[in-house]
Length: 466
Image (tube, rainbow, N blue to C red):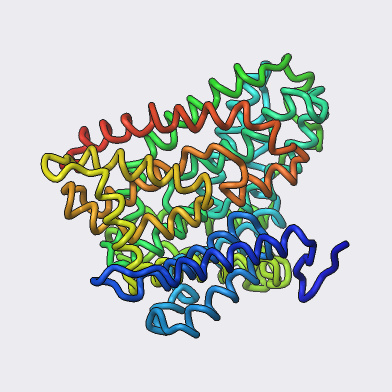
């Protein structure tokens, strides 16, 4: 038997999980801390409890965030202002702006127009998969949230899969949805403001005093490998592992693909937004505030692009609260000394002398991916980001490249539960998570064994890797 209280599922299994995490947290809190960081174990206990709730979804994300802030404030483990700064951070601004822009793209039909145009004229299954990757990749530049892109792409692809003859549960169907969901999410690590995990990592990076990262610089360092090469690898594996006959129709017949006047207005706003993102080295305005400004412009009544009730509701704002909690986790790890303690643990894997920046890059990448398999990608960000300073001291790897290494590791996702957008997208597309493992596990392995070395090589070619 189970019930609900304040939106929480009171099923015995979930209550048992919460009790287990609470017990583990208590045990950690009473372990002897290192002399240099007397509050490290308390901070680690709070983080362990919170990450456990996130990883298992034992309680809704909103409740997990409330529990985290309650524990952190009650123990005084970190100063209040830094702890709560995630609510007005660059990352939070970009999430809110992205929600509004995503709603506008859906309402005006701009996202649908782009997706349909790029998926037309395909004659084979590999071309069909390639069209999805290209279409969703273009959307990654104009819709800066994975959830917004899923809202645009999934309805189109459900209909397209049906018309193409790919029945639910078939290899063609699974490959189609997996490409739209995981393919877009993983390759969007190449674009600074288009992936919530990247936004969270950037916010956590700023909270430890990391130097600002420019949109254009990040794009140059990451797009060739994390974007283009990753997309090619994804396309090849899906085309082979989920091979299917050619689609019966090249696209869904929904009438002429015409750009509405409202969509044209939105395209001008988005074009201006992307241009401002690319020119941030000139004006030095952070991507989040540019995105929020663009979102607010979309709410101007006379433009007919979006309405506040469509763009922002309680469920969507929950993601902003969860984002603030994740950024708060990074603050707790930093101020309590737990982050430094974990960093020292990772440092045991680094030779006392002779450790190169490339070694540091690989170690961060592999550690990020490994931690995400049990703590989810957001948990991995909260744990690994505060250690980047230690890695810089031990290996000479600049903090900025440490962040790139972390995100390079996080594109190797072994299981759907590690990333909320992947789980949500699969549910929207009605694909069971176990059916995707045949593709995701090989992709994750290749992401570590192929993408990580290639990323290091590319950074050396650019001359930014010491």
